[in-house]
Length: 407
Ligand SMILES: [Mg+2]
Image 1 (cartoon, rainbow, N blue to C red):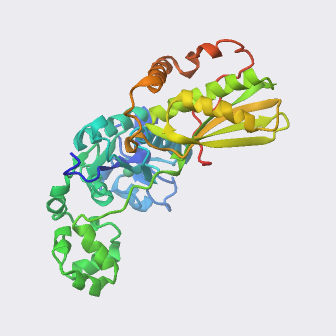
Image 2 (cartoon, helix red, strand yellow; image 1 turned 60 degrees about the vertical axis):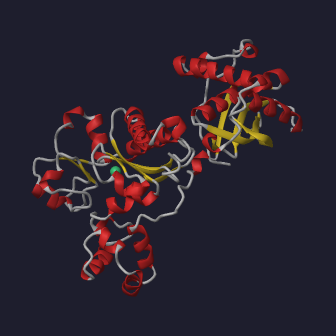
Image 3 (spheres, protein in one colour; image 1 turned 120 degrees about the vertical axis):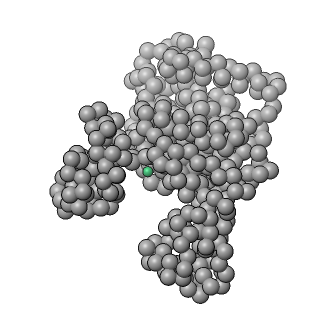
């Protein structure tokens, strides 16, 4: 696969995002034309459901005009808090596939799947899995997905077969596939540039690809070179990892303050288990471990340690965290204990997972077994032998799913 596919980049874009969420949350809106936007006639349509689109209604159209074109449409005021919730579900689902997810807006993101085909299959099955995962994570909403070897082509591909589309453009078919597309699909070409290109006699991306770059530069300036490259599917930009994937932490506020070494270690163990589980679930490796303690006087103390080798093992996280306790001058009492994994990278990019021998293998098997129980019965169901005592006083798994970006 990789010989033909130097990179595998997917672009996922939710279909009629706001309108689909409204139809999802209010079943009586399903199958009906829905316009998300202000009830006032002065605003614009934010999203039109697919049922409204045959009437010629679309995003950014003045509401007055949209309601003239489609008087039977139901107008629903936007609920951005709700859209953000679903967006978080979407981004979390994508983060399960790659550490490199670059959101472009609430409802679309690039996912770099390079080097993942041994896990997820070829480009088409990667796309199909992304779609299925999004549908599951969002309670049944659909996304259209494009897969190619560059961000630009993946993005054009995702818009090619909406809604619920999956378009795969192999690298050697890029130029032929782009050629018949209208110049409005050239990324960054606004209405003015499109008009200018049309004046020059260009109607399709293929026309631009075949043009003399000097002519494009003369007419459009330096951006002309960029359009020429894009029209040929040349786009070397990397998928930028999302800021939220830089560290991952698990911390608990305790019901009563603790100061005994054993109790602090027990809390570290639980936190390290939680962090390890999330690392493995998201196929990430940590390059460092940070311990956070909050004193009963609400002073926050942290100590951190880089790891000699990246890890996703709960055992290694715990061992490092427990050793870090010696670096704190303060002896407690503490009201909060937390463990943070930082310097995260994608497990797919690391070479360190192929040492399936010795102690590492044993602790990985244990991790895998605990993960399976946690998946089935919830994180609280799992306790290692050392955790099975002294459970009273813990407020449950507070903040277990807390993903922060302080690293
Ligand atoms: Mg969308």
